[in-house]
Length: 383
Image 1 (cartoon, helix red, strand yellow):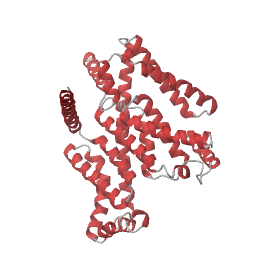
Image 2 (spheres, rainbow, N blue to C red):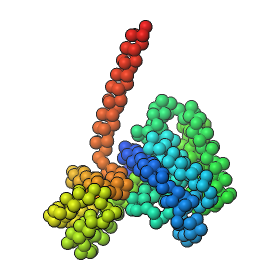
Image 3 (cartoon, helix red, strand yellow):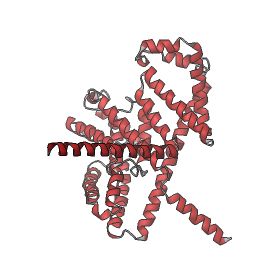
């Protein structure tokens, strides 16, 4: 009996230590990085008014509010324009690098710092999409989101798992140390303690990979990182379920979603009428408005329960993604819809993502072969 219990316990520990849902984590990494990069690029002409030195929400008010809420943002460290421009460009660069999967351990942390810096500088300038990204950026730091579809995965395959050849990773880690030390000495915040723990653990992992690749401690750290990844992915999924369930239950309490006025009046606000002819066409059909209201409430409340039934979940997931696309087009709020679409992708079936990975590999191989034949033909013709 005791041996059976120990065997099951060891099997559970081995299962929990393996990295699960690496494809879904890669999709989230690409999606959230794309979201932030596009959002900051779109707001480039208005960046100083929304988040910089021309912001009506002054630096003094931002510091006072952040002191009360304990929010973290590096933009309140200085009111100069050069500091704001540096942080803004660094946030865009971190989002692009995270999307490409370059040094995801470090860029995920820099991505989090950039998101918190922008969002907490002007907390009243965003919408629900910004809140979702701010929450998910925290969870994404603890995932192994660079194992698939990333430059990290390509480099790991080229080095064949030999971490001693990867000197750039150690240099990247060493470069972040003095930066973190300067920030701690000048502007201490509780978040910096979290960053110090991350930096120290990453340094320990790099040291073990380089000088003791077969040590027991390295295996324990690898299993711990796998468990942390799995917990973070589970928390992301639960967070999405909470968003939908709370939104659906809140809608069901009022009469506006029962009589259809919630959707109807929203379509007649100038803020949500990018194409008036399209919103008028949709709002003129009372049956369609009725179906949108009741369908939205039913889908949002029932979505967490459909996770128990894979086929129903996949169908409902596709319908909800199409609904978000429709909201982006009809109401003109693309970034909120994009944030929810990316968050929904955590529930994509692994078989679909593996199939997409295989098809992409075949397409890339064909393009390389065609490009090689084209270059070879040029060389033969030139000779």
